[in-house]
Length: 258
Image (cartoon, rainbow, N blue to C red; front, side, top):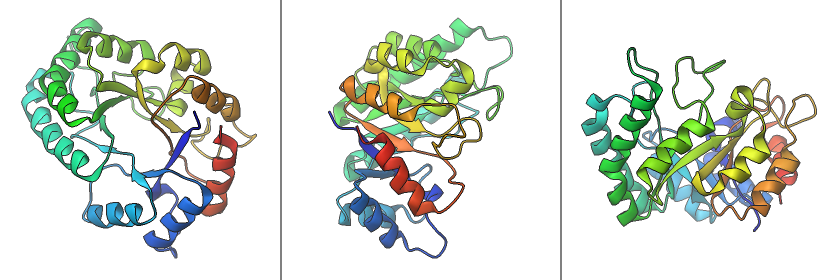
């Protein structure tokens, strides 16, 4: 199965280029999708422009906030309501995945207690996500460099949540950059856990820049393994190009086109 590539468009839009022109170029290169983070006032424009060029909007954030997430039971009612609204919007506009967050570690809460709390939070909304056909992708982030204190910082932690919920719509956003920082062994971990992965993000490490020979990840090999695993969703590029933004999109697409 050929990898369906996506771009986190705010990171690749030149200041002098319109959204229309960016998405037109992305489609011409071969991208299948674009994605955003939080819904802003331009959300309708983003979706309409993407669809005009045959691009899916692959992913967006489903609830507030990254640090104050599902590991706090007092957040569950709020997050359930926010996810319900986001699920409806995603279903309306054909957005297959919503980003969810464990939140930062809480004092006096053990890892097992936190896993159970996050699983219970997902159980409240998973049936609605199943009904609407939308994936809830809990993001794996590093707590070493970029997000100190974030709890879902290892693949095994996230998988433990998914296994407890046991819903076809509760999955992980496997960010390759973040997981290289925390645990490495990327290809083996991806292949062993592919059933629980609903979205990927990419970036070179260190620096979160281009996937060139100045960083340590072999993205050609990683993407070849993802394709061979029969992964059906999107691989989203979320890095800060060091040079020309459009040329970075072209090089990245060619590198990951497996």
